Image (cartoon, rainbow over the protein chains, first blue to last red):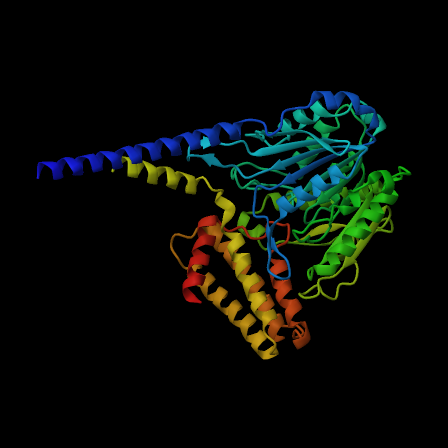
Amino acid sequence: MGNHSSFDLRNLCGRSVSYSMLLMSVGLAACTMFLSSCSSGLPVQLESQKFEKDTVKYSILFIIHGDGDYLYHDTIGNEYKADEVALAGAKRVAQQNPYAEMFIFHQRPGRNFLLFFPLRDGEFYYYRNGRLIANEMYWRDQKQSNFDSEVELYRRFRANNQHDLINVFLYYGHEIPEFGGVGYDASYPDRTFTIHDLASGLNGFARDSTRFDLTVLSTCFGGTPYTIGALGSFTRTIIASPDNLHLSYFDLHPLERLDFSLRDGDVPAFAKRFAQQVYDRLTKDIQTAVSVAVYDVDRVQEFLLSVHKFYDNTLTTLKGKTQNSLATIEHCDCAELPAYILPIMNEGVDVFYRPSHFGRSKNKQSHSGWECWKY
Amino acid sequence: MKARLAFISIFIMFVFALPANAGGKGELQKYFSDVANKVKATENASEKRKILNESFQSMSKTLDKVQSLWLISEDDRVGIERLKATLKEKQDELEGSNGFEQVSDAQLNAFSNYVVQDMEQADQMITISLVTLLLIIILIVLLV
């Protein structure tokens, strides 16, 4: 009996030791994961920075917003995360451009480790001459969203001869609100993010440089007079989707090998080729409307000045409405509103448009390239 | 026992640490993507119509049920109303009612893709909270 009891006791002790060891192992693994999540992914390779600066001709700055619902399916039902697909495309572009530097900022959903310890929610990649030079996790702005962290990293790594480079900026994400903007970041539900904030960010990136040569805004409803006006202060040519845009976004392949496709340095001509390729790719698989427009910022100024007052009044009216009444307000082609139908409306805008194959707008055969509000 | 509790607690913490937006709207999209796959796997046009029609009806019934729950916020009710209106338009187009030209038999596969893709635009049309979206998903699974 005594032996039996002592056997049970040993057995119990043994189990207790196993649990303790298991617990310690899990704790150790957890601590290791936590600590590794705080460190940079790849140490900065300063030497590579030094000797290859002269060979950089193109500077590409890419912000991918991934902090929201970004799931989509292809026509056979495979699931994709739009931000991850864009990131893979961006890395491919970086690797395929031997004469470019590329900054990639992936804004990821905020996550906590062991419920209480927040993890860094941004990942930065810096490529030069097709090679990855730096990769580190960073904290996105915790309060107002002005891209402060991104601007700091951009300034730390960018080539010195910015004025001699062709500068390209890309933003891939959900529609950026023109007012309000609460909840744009799923991880920061009380924070606002608007076109004004994006323009502030662009101002930060371009502060002591010239304007960006090209901005690619891959979001829904990017081609409004307000958005083009706000971003136009910091860029010469803009590619945007005035109407809805499927989450498969603008294809990034045209940005590969800029040393061939942009050899002549003619950015407006390249922008039109880019838009045409993006349009061809989207129309192949997408049943909803496809609209890609190229805006020559200097040439659209007259139209923007002419409609500025109308559009501002609209935004002021919309800002005064409740959330519930805003839910019923929709976008529309500015050409449907008499105040915007001006002889200069099409000046400086090239539009690639195909209507949705189904729905109320399936017979709409053209788009002015300018999107407004119908209320 | 304490060690076991601690182990379970750590496991739960890992689960909770998953991003909150991993579910929700994505599950709603998956529902329509599965419907589209069923439509495309079917040869018979009237069977395709039936699958689409039943999916719209099931989703609308679910949305009605969730909308009537006392715990649903006013903002979510508005979001649900908007989603219902979107679904109603698609159902009308499928049937050819309310001013819509009926979707032809040959276009049913493409129409099922359109339904999925229309939910997957890069805008922020669906402004329904995660909790409410999860409720919708749970109910649609129970009802179908």
